[in-house]
Amino acid sequence: MTAAPRLQPFADTLSRFVFERTAVRGALASLDDCCRDILACHAYPPALRRVLAELLAAAALLASTLKFDGSLIVQLRGDGPVRLLVVECDADVALRATAQWREDAGTLPAATDLAALAGGAARARLAITLDPRDGGPLYQGIVGLEAASVATLIEHYLTASEQIASRIMLATDGDRARGLLLQRLPGAGADDDAAWERVAAAAAAIAPGDLLGASSPAAFLCERFPDTDIRLFEPRAARFACGCSEERIGNALRLLGRAEVDGILAEQGSIDATCEFCSRQYTLTTAQARALFADERWPDAGRRAAPAGGLPH
Ligand SMILES: [Zn+2]
Image 1 (cartoon, rainbow, N blue to C red):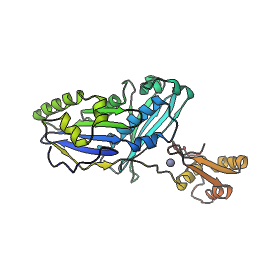
Image 2: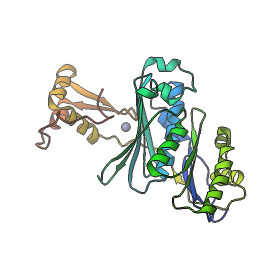
Image 3: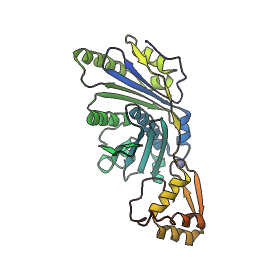
Image 4: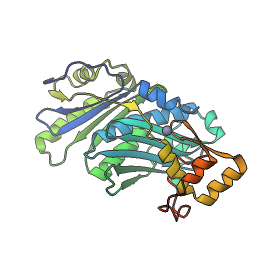
């Protein structure tokens, strides 16, 4: 281990590292309070908690590979016990999640896989979207749900979209999540093939309990890859943060359209909106709601597609 930064606690961190003199890189995610806080926003059934926790760790690992300033959004749509599941991680490792599920999701065993939660692989879609903050083009990759585990699904996505051989391991106890990503960089030579084989073999021997029980990224990497020089970069803090605001709720209402908003006002006298991610409540008086449509920039409101999440309900 060379040039390791001072030892940091493992909790709520995303740490990148490289295997020195090889074309292998990786990242370790540890989501503790951050994962608990996100899962505490809704009364998720146990099977959904586990899948969300794993997807949160996977999203942080995927975000560690991005070279742009924006958000990575993992979205599952199905018509089984879980209809919608959204996990977001931005370039600052701020994470949030939400889901829509039926009551019978509560009766599923905790170990139910993603495809079964979504009603079967044939009827579910997992989309991974990269949303640049500068307003650049969205990139979206669709992943088939044939694989059973979240880790295998994400490996397939990385191999197909980036053409980079990847290994992902995810572990959760239902409250916190940890993940390890290993990638073989493109353009590597024969020596790197051997290095990748060694690293992949060592990774295959890692059990979920090893990840959950590790005390720090440095200790974990030293123990699991003992004969390899690893440069560990300064860990970055991972946290729960929701980007909702009165302004965004206002924009969602504008997209809903004046007629719809007037209808709610006539019925309820005000508009109560709840953020689908963090459950924060927003209340708009009639005057506040009407003021949203005073601006001429929104003449076509109501005709546009509504965005996922953030709409009042
Ligand atoms: Zn929110």
